[in-house]
Amino acid sequence: MTQEERRIFLIRKLLFEQHRYRDLQIPSDEAEQRTLLRALMNVRPPRPIEDDFLTVQDAYLQEETARKGVTDLAGLTPVEPGIYLWQGDITTLKCGAIVNAANSELTGCYVPCHRCIDNAIHTWAGVQLRLACAKLMEAQGHEEPVGQAKLTPGFNLPCDYVLHTVGPIVSGRVTERDREELASCYRSCLELARRNGIGSVAFCCISTGEFHFPNDEAARIAVETVRRFRGEIEVIFNVFKDDDDRIYRGLLG
Image (cartoon, rainbow, N blue to C red):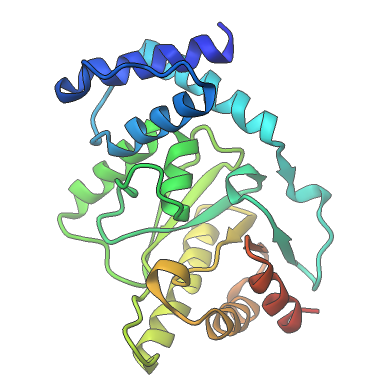
């Protein structure tokens, strides 16, 4: 199958399983098809799906990621011993684990095509990730507390695993509790990675953006916490925006 054939197949499957969308017409424009497929994956609840869907989905997502270009940690140069700074799309990074800034339900962002990292990671990992997270939450029996971490496979991402952590939401002035909870996110991810023999972890800018933690203070906490706790684990600070790149470069090296 070509990528277009895969995309149409996946859209049809997702439209058919959700009754309210069955009469929706598939657009002829490629960009609109991509948007529709992502939106349908974003709103799909965590439940099993047929093997033929997963086979086609996995091939489609892996090909799309290959076209975007995969960056291997082995090709990066550290800015400090065992610490890297990399600007780019974390869903294209090949390493032990990437960190997802999750919400307390842990099953991903349900807003169609939302630009948060939670949405991107769940989109490019595939529908298996939401189901895996839902099973973790069902076993836990309550929402994920702030500052802890959970581990899942990376599925169709280039990384081996995803570490999911819920950062603090800042309302107004940053409190000491906010600072400690953010530091706990980094510690919890590193401790969980160590227990599972994961040799490298890529951190996004946890709690910035939608959760309103000031970027410069969040970066300072991240760097200080990682320097104290990383041990033998190689750490990549992943930034997407130029401002964050500038902030981290001022703290590292």
